[in-house]
Amino acid sequence: MLKCRNFSVDYHLLNELMFSEFVKNQGVMTQVEHLQALNYMLKIGSSRAGIIVMKDQPTYKSFNQRSLSIECFKSLLTDRTNPVAAREADAQLQVVQSKMTPEGFVDLLKYGQAEIENYNGWKNYYEQNPYWNTAQRQERYPR
Image (cartoon, rainbow, N blue to C red):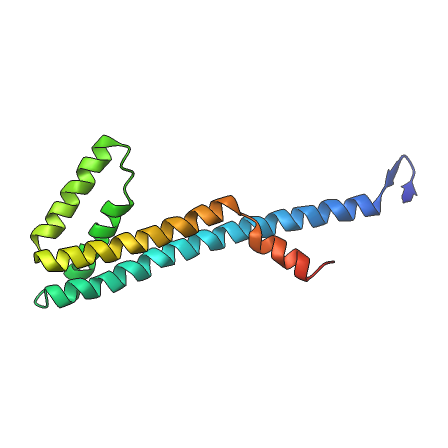
């Protein structure tokens, strides 16, 4: 402990405070990484779903194929407890269904539901364990 005139500094306490702030900042960065990972999961999933649309409707341009798969994913991600949002999502699915064959639409829907289920599983895991990566780093590399 250093004493100067009218105050004293406990460097151990100061070090602990700085370290806890560092860990908190790492935790925030971990949460940002989690959000980025979830975002990329949706991008990759909708791009792969575009391949299903491409096989079903080969005459569509790639932009239209991808937009159909994105509309399908958005409607599957919609909160169904909100009746207005649920109706809008159903209308989106109707539009997608009208532009595809029945077999292609069922394939797209099955794939989309599996991807959204995977997405929701990881989202729940990240929400329950927001600082998991930071804790693992601190265990692996103690100070």
